[in-house]
Length: 116
Length: 384
Image (cartoon, rainbow over all chains, first blue to last red; front, side, top):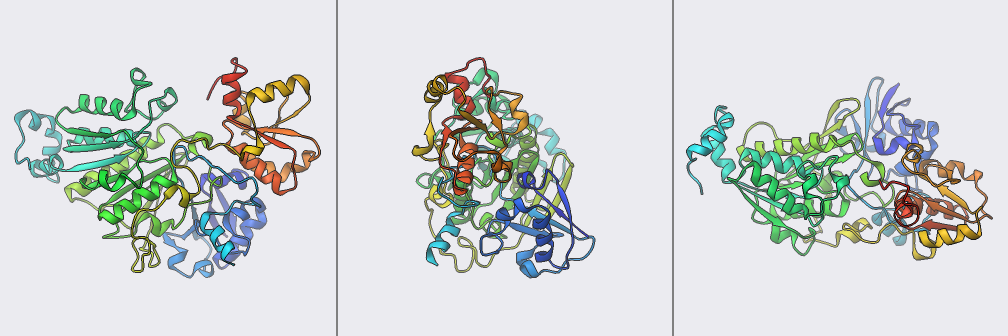
């Protein structure tokens, strides 16, 4: 079992849990376990193509998986995985489009969708 | 260049002078240095207070807001007597009372792509005490382009982050967060709340980093991110590396000048009418009041958290917190018209987005939320 630490902004989707126990030998499996346990968190981590969204940072111990092998980074029992959120503090005022589908897309994600 | 301290200054700074790591030479370094503080809110308050007390020779303050009584739970540089005053003036008066020996320059204007380079260029260090993504990306890019350290701090509820982004020696903010999350994904402190003492902790750490860098002592948080959680009282550190694909500080950077940050983040960085789900969805509190007299059974959907109902509630409203809307929409009838509301209108706009994508069409977003209702219709309710 590996401990996955959930940041405050995403705890609304993990029944308020700050840490979730997950199984798997690499990050992608741990995340599959997480999203199986808490399906509501999935759109916050992955885009529709199943890729990690670009503003999601995952660390194993003190290293960013982007500096390791991405979602193929191996994990072992006792490792600590941390999800690190982008937080702005203060009064960020969301202004979502009422026509969006599912979880809203960031500007770059929207550009990518348009380019396809 | 100031080369010596007066007797009065020696007495004022004696606790610094006693430490060999600071000493007379270090105090003179502080006296001859300058720091720009972006924002005089929760983070900017302790930052500016401690920098002023430490004897930083020149402090710049950028803000365009006025002091509100709801600020005082955490923005300790201001006070009850300065409610209604410009924040930069309230802060300047407090700092000069604390230390009349320093210079305070105030910029009562939003920090934007038009003025940021001009304001920041003559400071040694920039401190990010902002409260929104557009200004954070702007602050980062300005620091990268001017080659200055950007001391970053950010807060949410019980969580805080601190780092020193200094592209000359390590990663920048964009190396970690190449792009902001989409609007609506991360709740704001105005919606999500923040523990009042949290910006005190984080801002004090930012001030500590600034003083260390100015003195050239210790290990600055370059290439490291501190993650603090007040409930667990946990301090975690992670390593940050320069991102070779970084668009502002990488070898193939394609962003060479300041951009339109509000467009980049898809949100307004400064106050605007920004809680609308789109004009077609809006209903004003006056319109709602009028409709309720005709249709007392009109469904009101309150998407705030249950504990917020204890502060203020509209009688008869059904409560489904925003985070549960997607799972619990089967409790709602898409054929029945409903008015969705929250505190100010932004979470309800997000709820409408979720319901709309599930096929709901007959919805209205209460403009200004329950706070507007409390102000305009039912004064027995408190504002919060």
